[in-house]
Image (tube, rainbow, N blue to C red; front, side, top):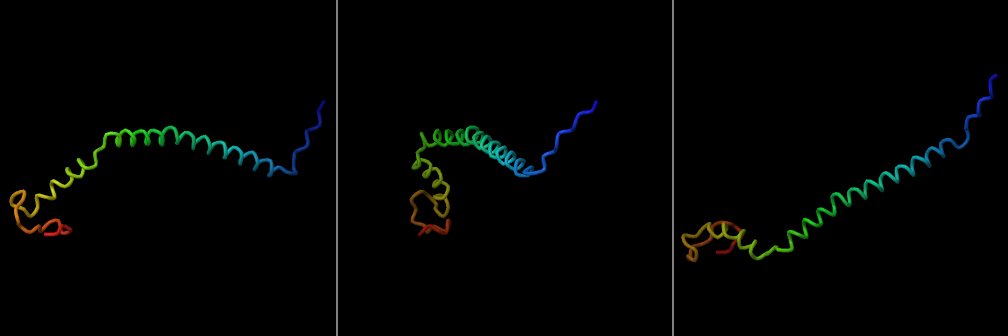
Length: 90
């Protein structure tokens, strides 16, 4: 007692398959973008906000400038020409 096999779908098979995979790819990419936003970007924004909340740019500038003032001077306010760094004027 054999039954008739179901007729295979020949017409529109590629379109149906592409539609399924395009929707699937869109959903996966949307999920991954959401995951990246909340796992990476939000943490990074919070870290930057925490850093700049108490950041004093003038204090940081003075700390960076201290080593440069040392070059070319015998004491702090000497009238010697500044030889280094080259971008400073004498």
